[in-house]
Image (cartoon, rainbow, N blue to C red; front, side, top):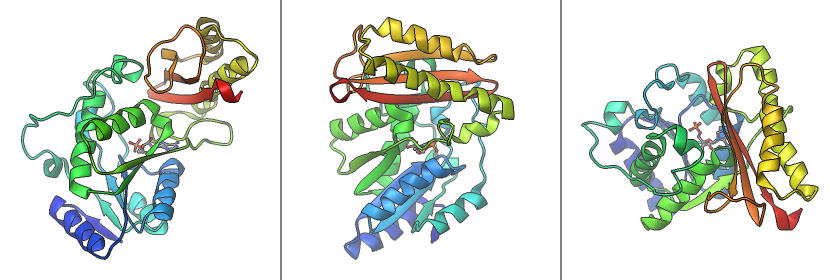
Length: 284
Ligand code: AMP
């Protein structure tokens, strides 16, 4: 496995692989790799011949007062995981490498970034789409893999790729969870043992939503009220949002219909946790 620190070196490595006819898979991450990331890498190894993982804590997607400085950066452990999972190249650039000068060019996906996390993290998606556009242009993959854990991000990236005619396929992989349902996240490291137990109510609230839809409840407000009751059992929780929206457009709905995305964001202690499920009413 090669570790590329510069744009030039990763480009050369990918170019050499492509010249041998290899299909290039790409998994962008911020590191602190866990089994959620590993599931994306495994999907990439399965579908592609040459896999690039980027590890870059992208400053432009963090707002003021967010956890940019304290975000975990266990690079050696991450490289070991990549070595053991069949990654060909890790691209681990410095911030200076990615942003050598004041960034004046931004990619902004409208509408889809206005609700859910976009309401609470106003510069977040602009940072994500800009860095992904840069990474796609540097790595030039055939396929890039994202997690359903960040549902809005996956939808936004897919739209950017479509709108800008970027020549790659986006594959979205299922959310990997702890046995108790907690969605795996690098930010779970911020939780105390008690908070980790409390955090299981996040997925329980989503399961409640699924049960209610299955039972025929269609009134969104009724479902959200029940979900809120569950989340309120977490003593230290600050609920940012509980939303049930159209799963494709992320537009608000009053009644459950078609495919819906139920998404929550909750602050527990010093961690901001997000999770979601998609419920297809026609399949219930
Ligand atoms: P991050 O390092 O948090 O930016 O995440 C990198 C990629 O891993 C994103 O596409 C995430 O959606 C995905 N990811 C993070 N956690 C999980 C998880 N628990 N299950 C599946 N994918 C995940």
